[in-house]
Length: 73
Image 1: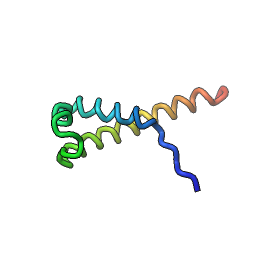
Image 2: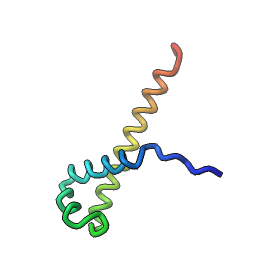
Image 3: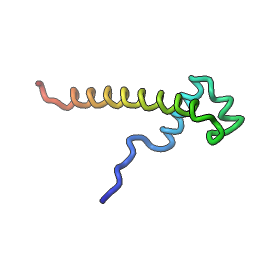
């Protein structure tokens, strides 16, 4: 049985994670403490934002791909 391939490369996921953290005002804390020492509440804010936004972006991309691939429907 093969493993599923991730949708995004790990470098892109990390970049997105840092961008969201910066948007939420947590980048200074991450630089000072590191990811491991952040409270789960703050990490949850980052994860929730990433999860919600990533799903929306993937749905938009899938719709655009379907629209572009359907011949004259």
